[in-house]
Image (cartoon, rainbow, N blue to C red; front, side, top):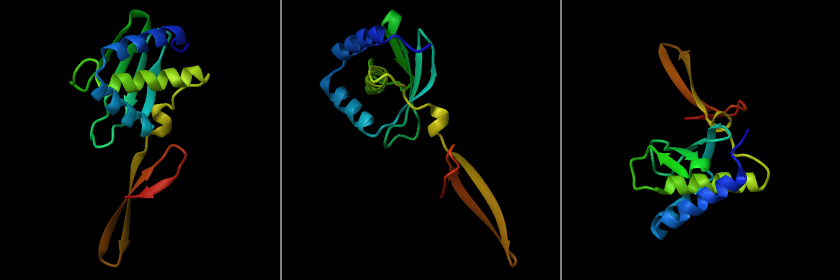
Length: 137
């Protein structure tokens, strides 16, 4: 069962009160990139993963709406822009009656293919989406 919308809205209001405008602007940039995905969700917590433009790591945000608590593994200030972006994205999806895309739906995997041409050996590297689309890297 997904997180309750009313509890989520209350949590989001608390996060917004504690977030400086500079971090709120950063959260908006993350939201514009459409980079918030759900990894796991239950009735008392949501685990979100964010692909932040310019970052090599993907911050993981945990939201606990019933307890009005949150955490992020980015090591930044509390609440960080990732927490705000995650809470906003989840609240928007819930308000529309939907959910965020799951990490497994959006995550690509690497595929390596070896091929020989004469005495040469070539390695091709591709990103493969869960739908099977490939992009040569």
